[in-house]
Image (cartoon, rainbow, N blue to C red; front, side):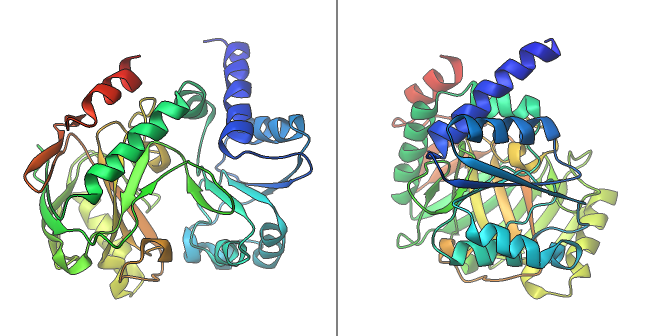
Length: 348
């Protein structure tokens, strides 16, 4: 596709993001954060889209920190970002090294006024595929159905061809999040993901990441699987090749026991997403399952709580069973409440 054609598609996608997803209103102050790992074309197009709806965009751009979350705090303009983001009406994060769970993030969210969306590392191609070309009302409906099906499931088992075999219990009093549906101040993610925190001490078995893992920054798309032995929600053994050794060393580097705890699980259901090594997109790959490790947002109402950092890993082609009924089989949504809508969303 020619650069001009892609620019046009990007303009459509960013206007959809600003106007239809985030519901930005005239006069609102829109903070857009980017680091030196961000795609500047996406940042600029989003600022233009905000101006197009008569909002007031401002872009904060700075050097990429070596860590994410709270690990980024010592390396970013901390006081300036806290002030800027806490006073904004809308915050769109395009950073490659995310501020999610950092001190400026916590300060902004505590104000109770900011609409924040995490779009970390989003580039031009990803924006057009995962936002511009997606039927937004239809994906919201699929996510709601996925949440309802999961809410009914007490005991769950997940297996994958790579060797994952995990079982756990759900707490029906904990929320299940359908990402991207913006309704007032709060924390939002790109649609195409449904996530929740199982009962931590009930999570047992083998977790195998065979898609991607990030951070640490040295990882991304995996050449070889990383095998994690999980007992009562905690990683007790890491197996695999050089990538597994690197991952274990990174987890241990924080000297924080919570960095070995599973924080949440997610389904991926964005029909435009593909495995690229960008975790924002990878965790939305159709039919994939993602597990978060480390810092656990208070919104999940779980037991892990704060941690020094956070990482996510992808399991491909899973089979997910809830109370004996298949929800996903080999990466396809097969539950009777999901199958027809999933086909329509994916194939039109």
